[in-house]
Length: 360
Ligand SMILES: Cc1cc2nc3c(=O)[nH]c(=O)nc-3n(C[C@H](O)[C@H](O)[C@H](O)COP(=O)(O)OP(=O)(O)OC[C@H]3O[C@@H](n4cnc5c(N)ncnc54)[C@H](O)[C@@H]3O)c2cc1C
Image (cartoon, rainbow, N blue to C red; front, side):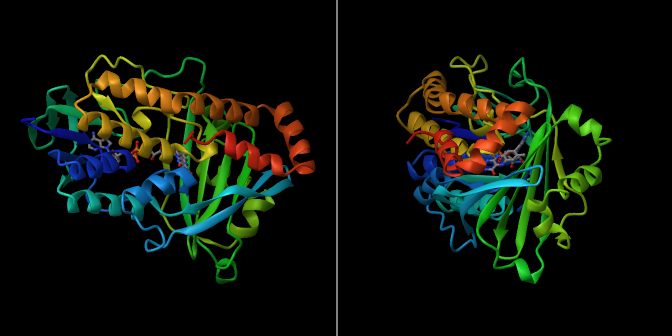
């Protein structure tokens, strides 16, 4: 292992793999292009599986100020269905969580270099903004962003999606609000709203590019349309936006699952391995699971193909199920019928939440 393992990207997948490899005694370098804590597009809903993996990594969510979420409310055209989640989830800002994971990786002996952008990579090493670094294996954990020369194949039938995120400081009267996630379904997408700290809520939206065009491509108009739904308006009507403008990302390749034989010889982790429907709030669990499989495979001297086969097996079915659910929510007649059924039998919502989880 002359060059050791080089990990590109210090989000959940990269940091978690670095912790596990360093704990296993393997030399590991992690390169993250951003310097210091930063916000990321994400609904910040930590499913019970994600919480379990974070616990394995020594992350104490209570100490980081994560809030508990145990109810879900689904809204559509002023009607809603509400039920208890079949598990307790958590809400926590990625700015806090990702920084804590990188700190833990460094504490276990990983060489964490922030402010280093990787420009190219192959199985033997990476080219960075600060020179070349040789490696025995390169783990690609760049998340939603593809590294130049290594794009993910876009699922052919999917239209383009755009994601937005904005944090809001809640007025004092909402600080003790019930711990629920509000999901608002609208044509071509959905919005998720939940607390991520005692007085901060995260609003995250996913919308198809053509529906966004119908809002003039503008965040303000999209937000105004979202605020027409009571499930959002009652929390955000007089809340204070905390970013100068929303974080946004386009061309999300939902439904992508990496091939078993990755031609480049790189190991794809996290969103680079599989990209599930955000609506189900399990992308972070997949990222953390992929990190565990990658570290275990690497520590057992397995190959990139061994790893990709295992990660496809672990996440493929769940991604397909989640995508079917997302599609159904986007199809007006199905969505209307589903709302009618869910209002009559809200506990079915919990069942949907369960069936789109990663299998244990
Ligand atoms: C709109 C939306 C809402 C979502 N909501 C949820 C949710 O509520 N719950 C949930 O579980 N999942 C959710 N997800 C999914 C979740 O955000 C991802 O699955 C998860 O962040 C993947 O982690 P990752 O480590 O693969 O990537 P990321 O967390 O994106 O980390 C990638 C890292 O790589 C770095 N990087 C990128 N390029 C380079 C480079 N060239 N050189 C060096 N560093 C680089 C980036 O700066 C970043 O820090 C959502 C996704 C979207 C799009």
